[in-house]
Length: 379
Image (tube, rainbow, N blue to C red; front, side, top):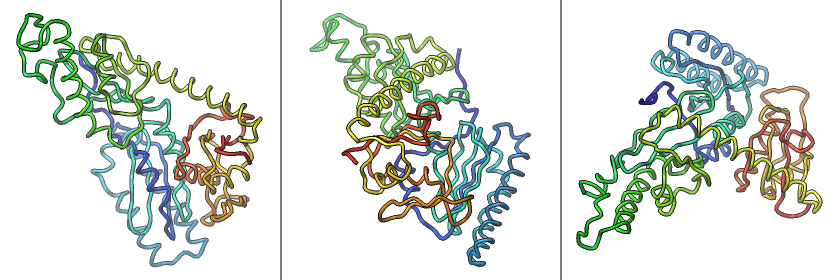
């Protein structure tokens, strides 16, 4: 049974892309997030919602006295996107539109997102963090002597096969032999050790082919294979985000949908384990004055590059500003073109300083706070 090939059109941002967007500043940065649908016949509602959110953004700029010439450029960029029939024909479950008067970036996402518009001098990126955080997304490498494929797994969408140039079709194809199971003496490669040598050659070629697709990502890679190939691949793997636990199943006989279902269980375990370890570490560091849930303290720590690990409530928004020099927080009564999400800004500064960020639900943040920061040194 074969799995689904392409049902959604998805652009998952990489961490380097996120870092680049965090550092971008403009006289107007419009961040629009809206629900979409892969069913083209029902996409009209999404286009109407996009037009309404665009109108809201432009009204905020008008209220701030924004330059009319620059406003016209921005409006033209957004209108062109709204009128692009080909673009709207291929969507997923949500869409992120990040626009300035000079350019527009879009990301089509598999995860559900609440319709939102933010206007500031920087982009609102926390919904994108949800798209790249556990447990939303993973790759499954289905590996056997007879076949190999990479399957992309999403939380709210069917799995999709990933096309990989130069990926060997099988171990025999990779080694130029009729079979890797011939145990008869043949030159220097024979017996069980010779078979492992051939499988190692196969695994190296698979790893090399994967680099073109996985480079720059931190998405978990789950290996679905039986022994000895599972251990052999782990021994030659160069992708840092390989999951510590894989799926001990015969990959060439398993449907993509079954792989995805099993992978989600692995992701749930990874996410729960990582979150629990973060909360335990928070308790330890709090006793050492190296942890805080205070927004002001976290903002100063992020500004000074002092955050090691940050747990963030992905649903909470606090409008305001954060001073660029000292990290002082000034909260606003309501969102406007002169403010932005303070939590989003703290998160961005932490990421740029090399902190690890976990996007979690409110119940997973110590004290049900909007965020919890574990610091590199005491306050």
